[in-house]
Length: 218
Image (tube, rainbow, N blue to C red; front, side, top):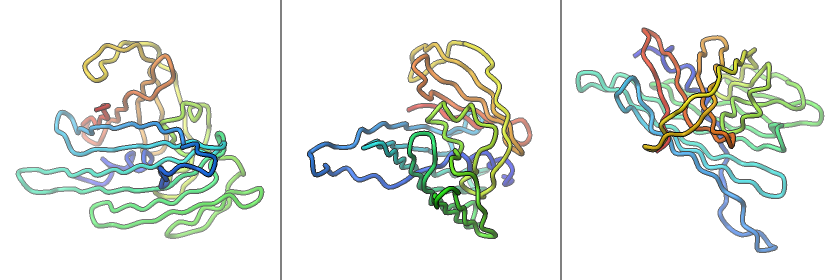
């Protein structure tokens, strides 16, 4: 399995450690979860879990992805990604992401510093605009952006988003009305579905050789 098949996976992972303890005033963070089973064509290759916490105007997201592709009983590719993002509204304020892609390790961090967002990757440090977004699939507001931060590479990439239209999608065994969007960028070709309440429902990407990498809610 070549790396290019998995390149789009990197932009999925955005997280931050979430505390489940109550605050001094007795209020606990509001939590949302997305648990996806991941398939390459019809073969299960792993899971990806997201946990979003929101409290006092700050959003924190915990995410963990683990994929393993086997071919003829041999592990051909492994992928592990854990990252950290903190948000104020639709603006990213902190990022901490680590990746192990088949033995190749990378780390990207970022933090809002005054009127710029400073990103530090394995090869470079750069300053980006004050209010930026990652590929935050859990927040459909990201679909209105023209550039997004890739949390694995630290690159700030141009993106194009097209609203395809409405359709019926099967989610957890039930038929659901959904809106389909197509997102493209350099080496990224992703289709996304959202419910009428703007909840992220599913994802697909065309991998090298025409194979389909698919996220299904479990």
